[in-house]
Image 1 (tube, rainbow, N blue to C red):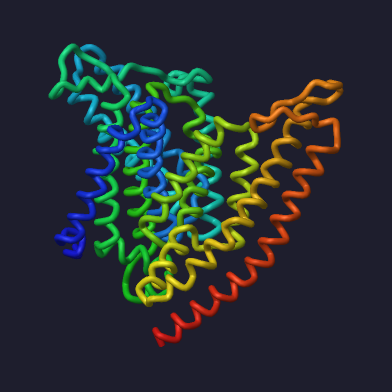
Image 2 (cartoon, rainbow, N blue to C red):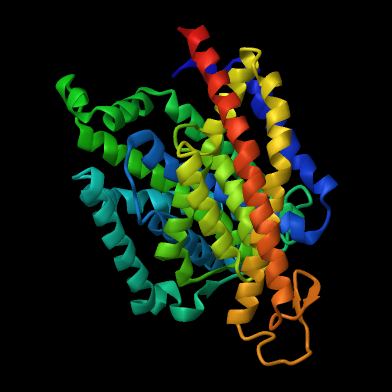
Length: 424
């Protein structure tokens, strides 16, 4: 294994992130924020496990929720089995059980799915994902039917160093610990011969076969290990929410983790971490503010595909290169200049979307003088005033964004040309 994983600089970096994670509940003490941090920690592990397939091995899976869900269900059943005879230490080790369940599912299902790569693998993974999701309703004895399987993570009468895992902040500490261990393990895997060969299979499978490697075996091993870490994530979500339903296995869950990974950046190890944080915040925070959050997410994803197909991590990497080359300073004024018109454009678009959603939902239609509350403002949607105002703000933002954005793009291209010229 590459010793760079454990050098002093790397250890300080990992230690700093761990200390920061444990310190966050001291700053954000509200129950809502602690619950949000728990969800983020779980999704980080899930997204990183998915990137082992997509980013490292080049396997586009539409059924990764299978391993996540199986790990969650097995954990919940094991939690109910230990019942009063268990204890906090047993509960803290249950993510290992969920991980082994996910790995076993990878052993069984991966042998079939990894026979082929590319589009064929994607379609097979989609079919298996839908098959397992259908089984969740066909076999209620294990999957609990529509109600799912529930349990209580506080088992036994003792405690472990004062922890019972009952309070949410204690559960957060357990999630951080397991997420940290899983993240370090997945990063270490990228430095192993298997991790390097997975990259070779992703980039040029024919050449990998030519030098004597079995590409199917490499894909198979990576899927098994990916299932292990997805099972750990599923186990953590089972302990966190104390209930697992069929939604854990469905295509929506597989789609969310795919989008997290893509938006964050599949070409970088830390990309899925960024995507998991961002999408989790959008789901919980923005989802709690508006019913139209899926539309915002769709527009954001479309923007990322068109403007930054390499994900947020690729944009960060470019800024880092500009910084190292001493070119970042001259881009800052352009970034600040384009920020204001972009905010104006976003304000207009949000206004139009929220008013349209309220109108389509039947709010304010035929209400006479009754105003409709939109974004904490009382508006009469059956009058042209609010619509003209929102259209005016949107148009102004669009014109200013195109004008100032054009200059920013020209400066951006010039900086990149200088950067590439320096490298050559």
